[in-house]
Length: 425
Image 1 (cartoon, helix red, strand yellow):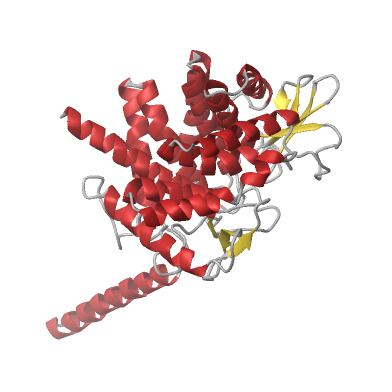
Image 2 (cartoon, rainbow, N blue to C red):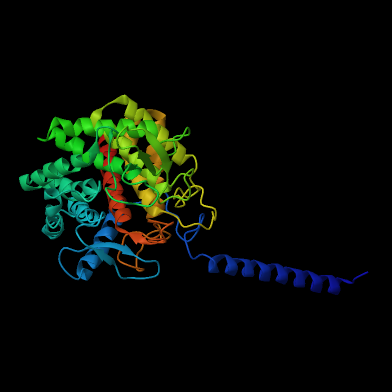
C-alpha cells in the first residue's frame, strides 16, 4: 500500500500531465486556425452589440486605401490573392467592372460627402462605352446597373438613365425567343456545345436592368423578355429539391433542353454556393419588379434548400458537396449575396418565416463582420475568404470585389431596416 506521500506525489504528477495535455491541445488548435473556424471565441458579438455604422465606417476606411492604390484611370480593382496585399486590376470589359463604382455609390449613400460622390461618378462614367456596343455577354447587367443604376437612384442624373436604357437595349440582343432566355456566353466555352444556346444562373441578376428600364422609359418588350427568361429558367434550371444547375444548354433552334451542367461548381449534380445565391437574389428581385406571387413562392423554395444545408456559422463552403468539407474553402461572396437578398425577401414574405429570414440575414452579416472574415489590416478589401472559380483554379480563398459590393449593400439595407423599425417602436 502506498503511503500518503506517494499518493500526493502521484496526484501532482497526474494533475501536471492534465495541464500539459490541455495546453498542448490549445496550441495545436490555434496553430491550425489558418482559415475561418466555427465557434472561435476570439470575437463574438451578439446581434444586440453589433453596430452597422461601425462596419460602414470600416468599409469607408478600406475603400479609401484602395482609392489611393489604383494605378491609373479606367481600371478596376477585382481580386486580392490569399496572403497578398495588391489588387489585380481589370479593364472596363471585365464582367466585374461595375462592382467597384457600385460600392463607391453605396459608400456615398452612407457618408453623403462629395469625395465619395465624385469617386463613384468617375469610375461609373468609364463604363459608358459598354452601353453603346454589342454586349460581350449577359454581364452588362452587372456592369451597368450596379454602377449607373445606383448612381441614378441616388442622384437622378438623366445622363445615367440614358446609359441604363441603352444597355438594356443591348442586353436584349442576346435573347433567343426560340429558347426563352438570354444567351450568357456568345462564344465557345468548354462543355457548352457551342453554337448551342447556354444560360447560366448568374443571368437572373441581370433581369433587374431590363425590368427597371421597362418601367422607366424603356420599351415594354424589356419586361416581357425578363419574365420569359425567369419562367424558362424556373422550369429547366432546378432539380426536384430546388437546387440549381449552374448552366443549362438548350438547342438554339427548337428551344429543347439539352443538359444541365456546372462550370464553376464541383459536379453537375451539386449545389454551387454562389449559383444558388444568384437564384435567391434573382427571384427576389423578379418578384419585386413583377409582383407575381409565383416568383415569391419560388424565391422561398430556392432559399430554403440553401439555408437548410448551411454550416453552423452560416457561411457556405464554395460548393455544398465539396469533397474536402470541412477543410474546403468558404465563399463569403455567396453569403453576402444571400444576406442582402434575405433582407429584401424577409419583409416580402412576412410573418414568422419572413422574420426568420431577417434574423438569419443579420447573423450572416455579423459573422462576415468578424475578424474571421473581414480583411482589416491584411489588405484593403472588405472581406476575405471568397471563392471565384474553384475548378478553374482561380480566386480561391481570396478577396473579391463582388463580395465587397454585396456586403456593403447588405449593410446599407440592414441599416435602413433597423432605422425603420426604430421609428415604429
